[in-house]
Length: 285
Image (cartoon, rainbow, N blue to C red; front, side, top):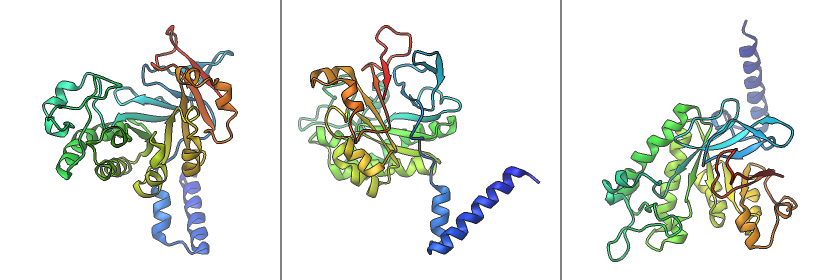
């Protein structure tokens, strides 16, 4: 008899007995069994959007990476919990022509001009304002999410969830509806999904929209870490950048000393370049 199958059956039987003893329904047990795996809360974490590499050298030679975030165009890292980056509310650099052919899905200002992110002048803003627009956006990016699952990623990170706070033309309810659609799509594909930034809606993102964990940039600088760890516990991945720390007169050691920071907290260069580049920065608490 297959020993692995026997062990799995024993675990399932124990779960059923425990559920029965606690009054849980069979539907609740099934929901727990179907819940996507969350990232580990210890080990080595890296954020690799600017270039993928398979090992980290922390001073004593190469060490394996336990949790990694990579762009949807990259491959997941074998033997690591791999998170797929998807820009869910803005276009990616280099994709302008593709989206301009679908201009009805892009945000326009009051004068009818396309809205571009002033921080990233090669990114148009998507418009989730109507059900038809949300369906159109999901037809495109839902396929990217599905592709991440097919490639073997464990989870997906949806960026720019906070566009409604930065562009008055975006309705908050419509943005939440699109976020909820991304959550459903990721779960249907068997992946967990991370809330990215947007500390002000963390409780809603977790409790109502169904995000599973969080990825936060600069929560140490902006004193927002507790918003994420308060909702997601230790299942938060935290990235800080040297420039923001310097502007606030802080050091990375100050961040590491915070009591509400994430267990997996790292310092990366703003360009997130690959290891070996002159601009490369990596430290971990």
